[in-house]
Amino acid sequence: MTKRIASDSESSAESTTGLKSATFQLRCIGCGDVGGAPTRNLRCQACGDLLEVVYPWASGDGKESGFKASELKALWKQRRTSRLPLDESGVWRFREVLPGVSEEINVITLREGNTPLYSMPQCAAKAGVEPLFAKHQGMNPTGSFKDTGMTTASSIARQEGFRWVACASTGNTSASMSAYASRGGMRSLVLIPDGQISWSKLSQALDYGALTCQLKTDFDGCLKILNEVVLHEPVYPLNSINPYRVEGQKTAAIELLEQFDWESPDHVIVPGGNLANSSALGKAFLEMKQLGFISRLPKVSIIQAEGANPLVRTVRENVGLKLIPVRAETLATAIRIGSPASWKKAVRVLDATGGTVEQVSEAEIALAKAEIGAEGIGCEPASAVTLAGLKKLVRQGFVKRNETVVLILTGHLLKDPDFTLKFHRGDLFPDSADPALAAQQRAPIVLEANAGAVIKVLEKFRDE
Ligand code: F0G
Image (cartoon, rainbow, N blue to C red; front, side, top):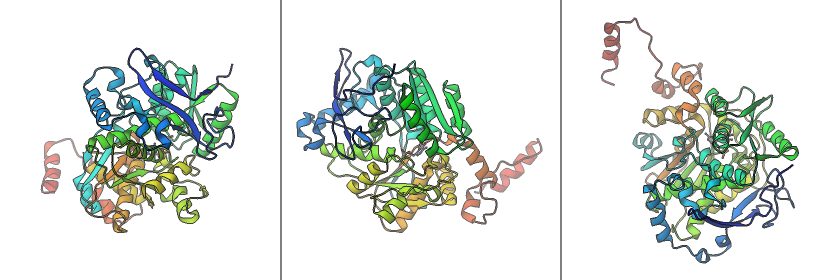
């Protein structure tokens, strides 16, 4: 039997155990249809475009929400001292602005969110801006930002009675989805491009118990096939076109504002792949402004790799009106995506917040990644596009030297050790004579096994 997906998409949730989340509907971002049942691949029945979660207060000035910003700010903060699983989750502690899950028992949480905000003085100096912060979403339970959206969408899948969930992935979504599925007693189907994702991410999916298929195509091809599979089989798609994923992911922005005592930073810089994360963060900033939590929006800017730059081209060549898909190629495999599903949502965020787009080269990504690592923070290559992009935005004058900037680091350093080792051993760009790259390389030194040899090396580097 095939299960319908959110057939009546209006829902309000309050349980005796204290779960109280928002009344919401699904709205099509294309034709504006509200409340219709989505297709099985989570698109609008009427026009096939993507759906988004909207709340009753979304069309007004926020007053009819009944929320008092000051009261909610206090409640959300207070929950950080609670031992209830729902409060310990850095996503569900914001449940008043999340879609309803009818019973607390349906919530699948690994205590995601609550990620650190680090100051980055050395990277600030490299970029020529001050102050600079990194919101490290790689500090989530499976090592990437995906967990914040997976807790909401996998909980909805379980509530809907699905036994199987599925995704196409460049690695992180599959790692996250398989963990949450297993925690929630569901099976997971993973479609990944053969040979194009990092081994650490693949090993996570295997260990978390996914049925993993490596397809002889790229990510865009995997996503197409997934869309077909869910039409024929009762599996629930957990890719980022899933509107409930976006809702969970938006909490990173709410948490960021909380970490800034509800003063918006001037700029938030996000890597762009399938473009759901930038859409999610932008949605949160807009909602928080509408509800009176903040008085001004940060500019959300999106950075892509030069070899996987469909949004940059779409904005620059088509003023954001029609997607220009590309054949994607980059060593930052997480964002090796040529035809991003959520491009329209991302363009809306750029327009609404006044952000911009930029692209960076492979060498710029590798250098930025090493600089973030040398600050004792570290991240995976896709996350490092943020610092590389920031340097360009400062040079262009789009980011002013005294503006407050936050980089969203999306994945943990350990997500792609191959890239890191190759960089430091000089194998990533063997023909490069760039002194900036060489200065960051820290290849391991092979020595005879005696203290004298070690001391000799130490003497060489002691005054560094
Ligand atoms: N950074 C990392 C580490 C990612 O894994 C991804 C996407 C992105 C940035 C881009 O985010 O797609 O929302 O624009 N990874 C997906 C995956 C596609 O399958 O893991 P986006």
